[in-house]
Length: 81
Image 1: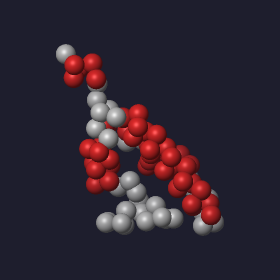
Image 2: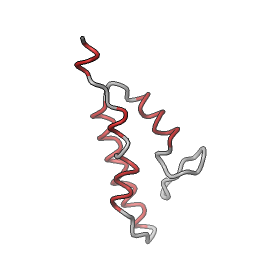
Image 3: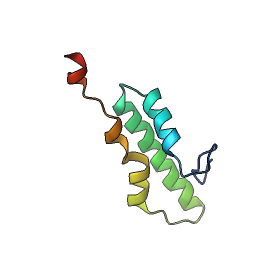
Image 4: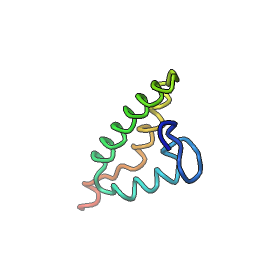
């Protein structure tokens, strides 16, 4: 839910755990595209929160939007062996 960036299903800060699982599945094998998508959403969230008069905690937002990506990465070399 914009502009607060909460999940429509559980009202947790987006991307919540279910959203992360959905995104990891949707972008499987395309981790760079997922990173770009989330970085774009991060910038939109910063803009939306500032428009609401909130001073966003940038390190916390970075961790929320991008910090979980290393868990989803697959080693392409290992898959091709």
